[in-house]
Length: 111
Length: 113
Image (tube, rainbow over all chains, first blue to last red; front, side, top):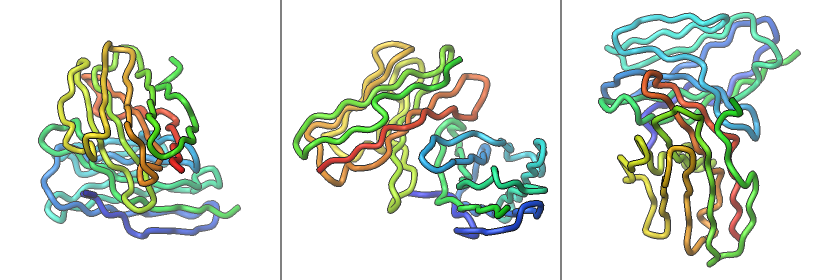
């Protein structure tokens, strides 16, 4: 079963704009991770945020985590056409190792 | 490092045939995971290993599926007999003891006709 649900399911923006994707989950977590998947390819790890962290940055990526609301958001600033992909959140429970993936957000960045 | 290597990239087989998917994790990674991705069900964890030992196989759909990890550099996922509903992309991923993030392979696209 899928723990995380991404919102929106699909997002289309112009190059240079910011893209925000949201993830909600149901049970307590050890950490939450975001992955990117280009069409026909494997998933690529982007960033991990632990349950005791509220915000993390990596380059043009900013992730926030609100454990009280069981939600996370991924912000991609100054988007590029190359950012076009599906983005998945994944949660790890007490085992910290076993990831449950959400349904993904399909991001299209128009040149 | 070449990353996680999966073979074959594509497999088309007839219903009832045995299918074997292969995975070579990143050297030094202690954890290996098998996932299945379909449009209807998304990404599902089938089984994962730690130091070659299966830890959780509760995601394996049924007895037709089996997975082995005979050594730290090789794992197989076998489906026998295969059915059309097994058609999916099967991913292998690995991670190290000090990093919770996964490195995924490119996947095997399985079509059972």
